[in-house]
Image (cartoon, rainbow, N blue to C red; front, top):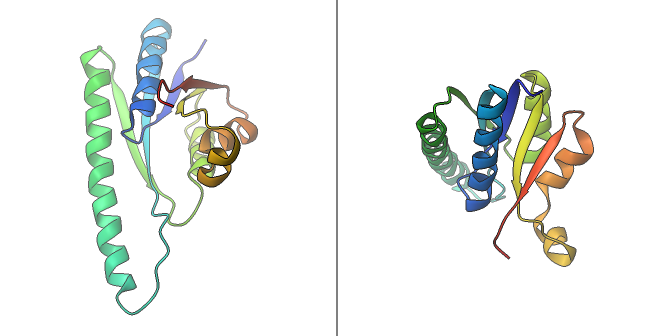
Length: 149
C-alpha cells in the first residue's frame, strides 16, 4: 500500500501522463501526493555578461517552474486530492540525483515518473533521469511511458 507518492513534473506531456497515473493511484490508495519540479539550468556560458544572463535565466526557470507546479496541483485538486508542491534547484547538477534525494528525504513510498523511453543514441545524447532514478533509488518506481516518439 502506498501512502506517499512523489511525482516529478516538468510540464511536458510525458510528465503529465505520469501525474494522471499518480492521481489514479493516490485516489485508490488514499495516498498523499507531493509534486516536485526541479529547476535545472544545463547551459554553460562564459564571458563577462554570463553572470547576468545566468541570473535572468534562473529567474525565468523558477517562474516557469512555479507555473508548472501550480497547474499540476490544480489538475490533482480537481480530482479531489490534496497535494503539496516543492521546487528545488540543481544548477549544473543531475535532476535524477535530486529526485532520488527528495524521495529519501520526504520519504516517499512510490515515485511516479513519466519517461520518453529513449533508446540508443538518443538516450546517450539526451541522458535519462528516469534510468538514473530506477538504478539508484530504494523507493519503488512506476514509469509511465510517453505516447510520443
